[in-house]
Image (cartoon, rainbow, N blue to C red; front, side, top):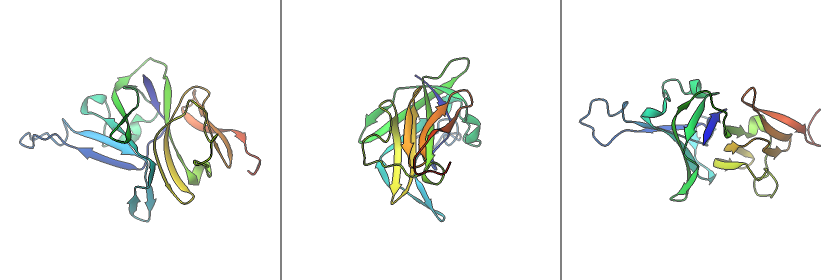
Length: 178
């Protein structure tokens, strides 16, 4: 499956190989992870209502020093799978010249408006959650969108603009300012 990255979650961490005698165990064989989380001041809060993460291995073409360079890029990925109560998505390697099957985007309450996660119909059937953190009305949601998929918030319906690799407000909601 080919996935184009539109945006990442807030929480980043790394794991090194178990062979600490290797002087490059912290870089050459490290894996880098990302998930949704909420910042409160300088503190990171893990308030997962849907726990999950994405993973980049050292051979994936991901540069942890410059994670935003991966935005707008397409990667060959294993399909998302449930493991030990969490959703996992492995980014295997960069892919060029291929059309993505899905788009990974992170929606935030401050930018996209409130989403009623507890109510049915907040997303189209093809949207697959990877990681969602929620605290009160604040949220961060890492989601996989297919072509034509959408998420409904108080502001309206959000979809992927495939040409520009971004999330855009397609239909304005009734309660939103026009």
